[in-house]
Length: 564
Ligand SMILES: *[C@@H]1O[C@H](CO)[C@@H](O)[C@H](O)[C@H]1NC(C)=O
Image 1: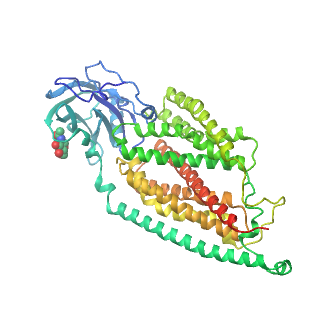
Image 2: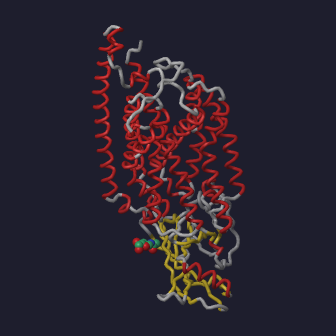
Image 3: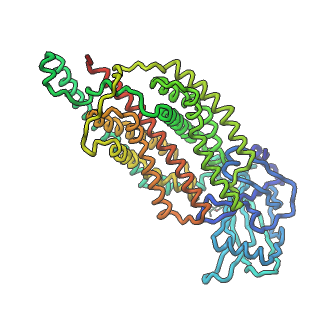
């Protein structure tokens, strides 16, 4: 592993390494290539090499290469030429292409990122210039590096068959910035703590209060009325009851606890959704406590670790639900549940990797990393899932429903079009989407543009709000569905919550076309591929949350009604 991560204290004249990371078009933040894929030249120093540090870094395509620049702590360097580029036609074309596409490069000093622009074209786009002089100003506090500024100077016109000298200088400045605060200058409080953001949180919060109030009022009242009606009918003798018109959700008591159709897929989805929920919850809490953005790739590593560690949650919920629904092929269910999300993510990554390899982008995931991910799936996620499944089947796998399930399913009566499950499913996602779409803008912008997301408190609030709204909405949907004497509430509740994701995916189209300037096959497939993965995970999570909340509600209302 690299030592300067651990030894962030320097002694005077100690070597400071300037790492070159990537270069790529400014508008396509995720389309990156190795810095030296452009014909830049390397400095004279040759002694340091880098290995991938974390799985997260490798997956994100962080591939640092030594710049070859000689920098020593507190040692001023006047403008010095470190190498020369012999500009032939091919090299010139490569630079011109990069300049035309607004290429930026990124470097690291002591984990601090530095961005610089490759070059510039003149107004009519005929002549292209390369910035050849990197002026580094490094701020130190005691024996630590706390600040770096890069100024690009020395514009040189790109003419074939000339030599271009690349130079650098280093200036050291005493700085008052504390080491702990050195990442603060990369954060953008005026963006993330903008009034809109606070306002949207406040708005969603009001919506939650309103919805919860509404749901509890409607349900309390209607349910009380229903109960009163049902108990009155109870007192009538058989003769009257046959004449009386019994209707409403009580009628389907012999069918509500009938297993859902496709129980295997259904319980796998619920199990995976519960796991995604716990992963999001834990990762956000970890991110709130530790500033994960200060280390490259640490967010992704944390997420992978937490995902593997929470596999028993998946097994538990999926396995117990499957057992309750009377499923017999539990091993198959466990495999589906365990590999649903990994297969979705890896499938997308694999597909995008092909395109990345074609483009020689640094996003291409190395073979060793793929093997590592497969090993995690087989040797960590699967066994932990097995533990969870066995626990779930034995601890809560009994179908102890409040009502018996009739042998023959009741026919589902004709109903108005807006009571059809398909319509309920489409409408169900609107309110949850409304409560999160402003946050989506901030999350998208931090991922697809140059902003570091750091307001995890907001994210936590939004997650909580999303869950409450989802549960409220699905409960109302399910109540209407059951009242129309349609007992297919399980998939309906799951899908009406999950349809939030469809709206999020549609929003991502809007975001792509109106909020970004991305272009090209690689960036486009990367964007829509990973957005699909993100939206589906979000959908599965919302679906599971909605289903879990609704099934508690259904169990509750049928427990309280007397059934003869
Ligand atoms: C870097 O630039 C910022 C803003 O111009 C300035 O406040 C800071 O002192 C600079 N740091 C160094 C080390 O020059």
